[in-house]
Image (cartoon, rainbow, N blue to C red; front, side, top):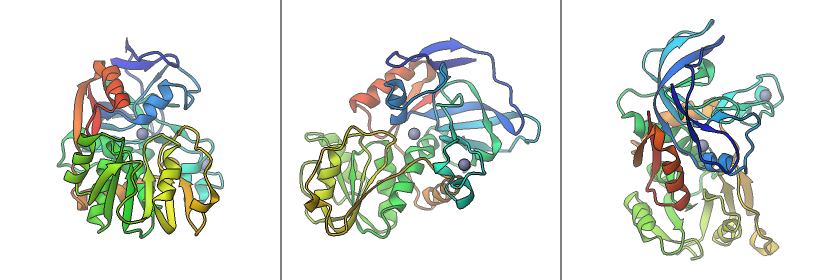
Length: 325
Ligand SMILES: [Zn+2]
Ligand SMILES: [Zn+2]
């Protein structure tokens, strides 16, 4: 099978011909139909998030059809989705308290386990999601991380009605739709001068869109920072009303500059979101259906993975990049 493989930090992915993997106990053999490209993949390539045991096939937003199963697993009918969370120990204090996203022994798809930048992959059946029948493969792929982890961040915003989204990429374009469906007001913040990004946010129902340095017309009750830029945290704090929360949704962020206590005082808080639980996935996929979320995607053939990653890095993309073998 063809696969795009991470070999070392800083190098482009290399196209390889690999044997089709064999499903072990509890695993499915998957024929990949589409795989979303995530900013985490850039952090892995840049060495900001470690890949413990390279070479590795990246890709953790896999839409696939199961074609075979190992012992103790059955081939499900219909398409399935494979997310970032690939395995947990099931026994630690986090796993046994509904917080498997925090498991310290967790293994992640496309980091510890070969992922979906390939024609085939294997996955533990217990960590796969059933997908709805009606949508095209490439529209579903971005729901599996951009959508799902974005949704976990949105839930941490509680009942906040005036919601700021900093960085309007794959995650924000999905979460803006969910937030609107929930009756919230979305305020979208982009790089200064990104008129196309701000217009895109307004098209998706944002009541206001502007540059990250601009104050919103009204103080926000919560903000989610999707861009991996630590400098956005004090800006978002300054945009908050008392009691508001800033949620950092990425796996990596540049250092957060120091800021006056003044902008945190008044029971404002800063939190991070890590990974996902399987319960998040089931809940979010149901909500995405009800809210009729429509993803905007740019499709690339598998062998052009590096081009997709470059476009993501430079902000040339609207919505999400998806690889199709
Ligand atoms: Zn655990
Ligand atoms: Zn991701």
